[in-house]
Image (cartoon, rainbow over all chains, first blue to last red; front, side, top):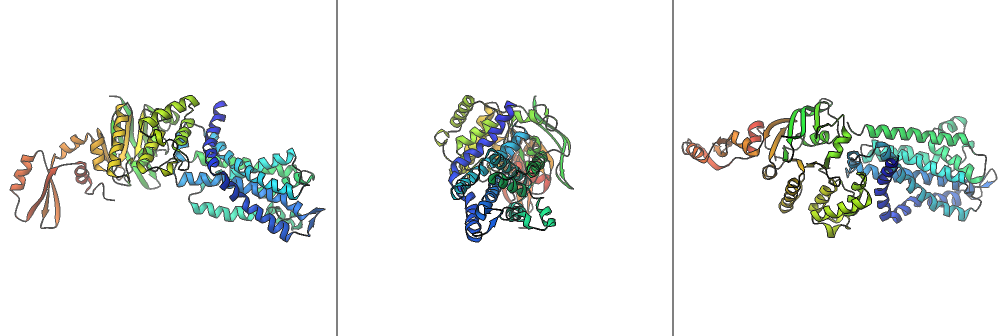
Length: 249
Length: 287
């Protein structure tokens, strides 16, 4: 157990050193998108719209935080892993060392969690300033951290199986981007026909943004959605382990 | 003699393509063994199988007596691996890279510091310890790569094409380092497609062509089998022909009796390239 923890830290350590050197750039690049969304949708488009007693701004901020958590963690875990594996070829060093695949998977996931949380925290500061009704409860933090974990695992998984840079781009365009806009981040799913709504519940970000919004606005908490989010996490984790086991063929 | 690496009918196939086939190797403890062959001959695949990174399709391989498939963890303890591509984190410093490798090998913080300082001193990089790897010269990067893979003091060091892309002087400095590591007790398994490197550095070589071992032994013995002297002749101003002789006297007699349409180009000592050409009809270094 002690070994597992120290191995996880060793894997995380090297990426933290990298982050320490590039933290400003990391922070800047990961909050530009969400701030643009906030300005364009929250202030621009959404002014005057209200949702179930909340201003559009109050409604959209938790959604944007959810998607910041997603992109921050997904990219934070996946991109460097992918580059290390395919271009710098330094991923083999992990496989040549005595650390377990479990420690490797979790260590690589944690850097995504850290980066996702940094980006979300930055946006949260902005969010609290412009919308003081935002409720940052322990439940909110639990959902936020869980979301970072889930999308970080997805990043590790894609980073492990992508065969080229193009693969990474394709996945981003075909899965991550649609998820950004469709998963109840910018609008309420209740406005949609049932069939479309059901389809969108297949996306993990839908569960993340619904849970996060409920926690942030003090609405009844959708435990089922939260469980579904954790379920996605388990599936992604299993995928990571499988991908790592198959790394040597 | 103690064998550090042993393979038996080792094969690795990707679909119908066989990368290595029927490989029987023995590497003795304490030697520098060179695996010589052109690009694409199966050298890197062999290293990947021996270092547990790739599973063989059939056959058996062991390092320090541990089977690479059944006891990969034991094998990993015994070996250090320097890949052909620079497998360092380019954005981190020399010391950070070394510390990372030491952490992966479960060394405590005092031990980490001690060994990093020792190895930096060993390769003369102490004053560069805090530089970012990306800023270093090619030769320095390679030295960092090598010592980073030695943090756990392995018995066997695998070097995949260690001097590719380096200038002649840097190459010689790396040879010195490899010899020094060997003298200090590390068995070396290196791959190369440079004839000169194999001859200058290796006590024994295996020559590989299209996944198969075509010669195995001491460079001098392999040359002796062929003939220590090579005579290159030009027939009808077109075709270059190679003839091998046990000594210069024999070669000279042959040259004196050549028909008029055959011109002598050169009489020289034979080399491992000749051994390769004789077996395959191709050149090793032809890229």
